[in-house]
Length: 489
Image 1 (cartoon, helix red, strand yellow):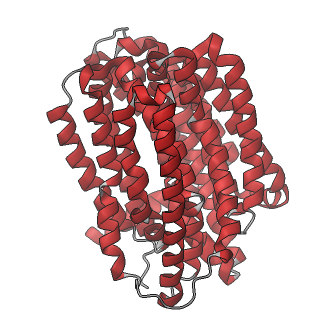
Image 2 (tube, helix red, strand yellow; image 1 turned 180 degrees about the vertical axis):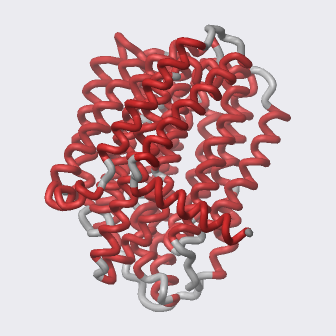
């Protein structure tokens, strides 16, 4: 099976990531202003609830499927049987989860109040079975994934501007978000026959998958505790408006995390392949590049958006979401923590078959997050939930680093820590000086211009400092750009 280079895959995934950032930046300001804190909070609450049922429906297949299919991608017969077995397991788990969902929809008053919105969101749970996005990631078909994603995002944006006009249209917006995320699943299923056969090849062996699937499921379940439970708990403890404030802050964090973890999505199948073939040197070289990428991007965006949280929220959601500013500032360091734990957990421990250690680290974080949410949400609302999430992400990273202390001790000398910290300090100083010159204001135009000017200064200084210090990853990117320019000439 033909696979593209890491660079090509990264470019494709970078395009996908950029689109995942640009499209929300187009839609979020319109939705926040049209639906308000309550309307947007209702949609996000319903999505968070369905995420739990989808988690049980998917088990650990989304991550396990990538690793397993990547190992047998050169053997079409084994690949076909693996895909068939995983789809059957996923189908059974989905039916069980959907049945429980329907029962709870009938007996839980809070669910009954949002029956229509929840039923619409549940469509994604059903379509997820045939979506097999894990398969396309495993065989590194990032050009296909990117194209489908962008096409359906464009369609969904047009639908949003045509149909969502006032706060009462929150159900329509919920349906559009489901379409944007799940419509491509049907196309995925139709396209699947190009790569695998649906003919029964031999006796199915479901047992071989169950233990690792459940390990990955435990990981997913623990992650969901502190990525979705906070929204559900805020909804029950403080109401939909507070959910709206929190999700506005989370929106920024999510966009930045998707940017930082984009490389990890590309690397997982390739790193799993290296481990399977015993290519330890190539594995370590790729891991170092991943660390340098995360430090460069993660540290820079974390520092910038802590300083520019007010302007970011004003541009994204408007003055009615001013209560989102502090939660966003609290959440920003989590962007860097998540980027680093994505490497230690998903890119190092997982390809080596150490999923249990990933689970343990996430369980520690999830338990801490739940306890802190119970203590802090009642008094501090969105800010309390943000602090709980931040501490949970830090604990996950620390525990994984403890497990990997021997390997990290050997690799840390090759990671550009000093260069990035110095660049961040100098860029922050430049940003501080520029902000003293800029006048204050709250108009959309002023906020946008302010963000553009400060971003140019901050990231310009950051980049120049890296080049002056000849930081490895930055120099590689410059050299790659120069090679592309020479080819065009």
